[in-house]
Amino acid sequence: MKHQIIIFSGAGMSAESGIKTFRDSNGLWENYDINEVATPEAWEANPDLVSKFYNQRRKQIIESTPNEAHYAIAEMQKLADVRVITQNIDDLHERAGSENVMHLHGNIRYAKSSGPNQEKEYYPIQGECLTKNDTCPEGFRLRPHVVWFGEAVPMMEKAVEMIMEATHFVVIGSSLQVYPAANLLGYCPTNAKKWIIDPKANDMENPYEFTLINQKAVEGINTLVKQLKL
View: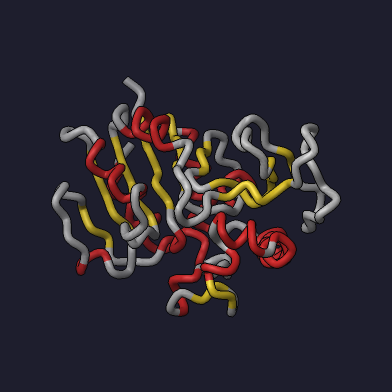
């Protein structure tokens, strides 16, 4: 049977590509309060500010490049069925060559309607800017395709189904503090081989008996490849 490797990646996965998160600076995300740019209420209060913030983030992501860990995961596809579930809103996994990527919290390179049918369709954003003149066919202003704080995670059920089929489950660069995503670890089969790659891995609670690799993503993925023995 072909191995099914599920990669669950968090902010630490993209950190070595220079992409920061609000958790790096006490709730400030590139000097913005997250309550002003990353909630449904923020959009209702000031959609122009929210769009400006994500345009800046999108520009940074477009100018960033995948790191060695992204490429290593893509290389694993030659040896196993590799599926990526990422909390990150960048597209670095895809640009490195990963073919099966689920964005749990959305993808900043896409937009969606700000109306009631938000998950009906996602629209690719050409370039870095989303403006107030960009609308869906129903006439609603387009908003970034990201899951904001306080919103449901539409892909959660599909992520659970994917994880339940894993023969190998690897968490990379996640603090495991973002819920409900952190609850996904409990759905991993008990007989699956499991790893957590993170600089603070040895300090984490480990109720599911993961093998801990106390390294950053690039160094840790090299350690993982040696341990996988595919």
